[in-house]
Amino acid sequence: MKYCIANWKMNMLKADAHSYFTKLKCLINKDKQFNEIKMIICPPYTLVDFIYGGFEYLLDEGTFYAQLGVQDFNPNKDGAYTGEISINMILDSSSIEWAIIGHSERRSLFKESNEFINLKVRAALDNGIRPILCVGETLKERETDKTEEVLYYQLKHSLLDVSCTDKDFLIAYEPIWAIGTGRNADNDTIESANSMIKSILKNLKYKIEKPKIIYGGSVNNNNAKNLSKICNLDGFLIGGASLDADQFYAIYNTLKLTIGD
Image (cartoon, rainbow, N blue to C red):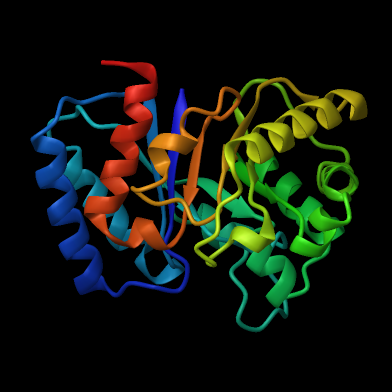
């Protein structure tokens, strides 16, 4: 199984989402269905229920495999946290199956610590939501050969007391210097980082039986074919390019070709 994940970030209104799914359905209907690539859409909270309706629209023949995720949540069940969305509020929408946790924008813009991210990972797993945990280094950290040190620290503290043995666990390697910049890590860089992540998980002896490593960092339909050649890569977390149905589906089909019809 590979994963093609759309992170819409703070974009899209209902009219935009309706147009998006209308286009996506047309693209899907022109193609063979392929359930070895899991498509996951992570919209803003305001569109969660609307998008779920869109999935029903896509799934009217029961042949296409798509799931719904959120971009973030607060690990507390309730309380005086003005403006936050709690884990219980996420659970109130029964269609949510995934959650992006620890995205670089959450870490940098909202100063989220690895300890707080750990609370989210544990809350998600405790409540049947599968995490998409994001890790990655800054440009300065890479240039000073601290990538492995940074990944070790992030994984050690973000996954403390986490046990997940029965389901795939997604870790998104997203070098911060490649997020929304148009810059890409090259294949060797990504493959090396993915190997570091798997080695770190093994050394830490955390009970994560099936870690899957995906890449996020200015992925688009022009570079996806080359990136998909990386041998230890299980898919993509896609930002800006996922806002365009044609681009997103082109990336999905690129992953499809890595497995074969």
